[in-house]
Length: 228
Image 1 (cartoon, helix red, strand yellow):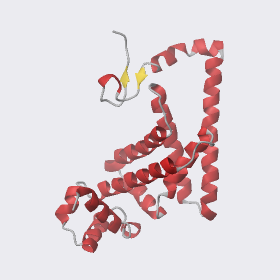
Image 2 (tube, rainbow, N blue to C red; image 1 turned 180 degrees about the vertical axis):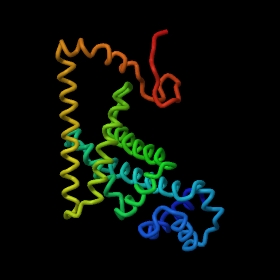
Image 3 (tube, rainbow, N blue to C red; image 1 turned 45 degrees about the horizontal axis):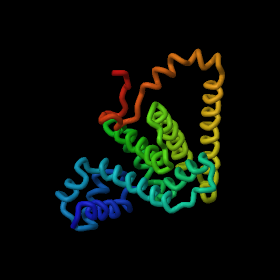
Image 4 (cartoon, one colour; image 1 turned 135 degrees about the vertical axis):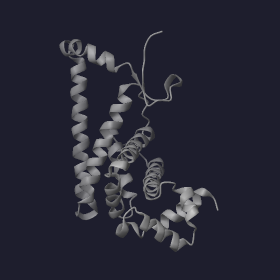
């Protein structure tokens, strides 16, 4: 049995227990009992136990979103609608809201907060890459930070949404993206204004030296660019 299939089998078995027991050792033990797998197998595929299991579930949702995005016809959509569609596809990949609610409880704990933040950032990064983002400067970071904020706010709203087919959530998402687009419009106007452009020349020049990760052989998450 491959590592990937073992991970999927355990994760699938755990999903029926997580709504009641959370992403916990109890849910993992129940999954082991259901599948008949040995605890050493769980240790191999989920070294940190429940937190790695929760992260695997999040990564699965991202993969399902990307597959749906690849199959979708986005040609006639405005770019802001493509972003909204990607976020909606990501949420629609969730079988039970309680799985996400329990995950948020886990990642709110101090030892796992960084894991949760990385998972959220990864989702935003997947969306931007799938939509063809080619930014190489500070915009690489601001786009992902902004989308992470939009996505996390939408998830919180969605968890409490009782409207039919989550219609209220999709309206909320549209409003959040409209807000972001208004900010981008203001930024463009500021750059086009000669007086403001001169005023911002120093700060913008400094930010312009920031590069996206992976450029020029740098493995760190971003770098400062310079001459020589």
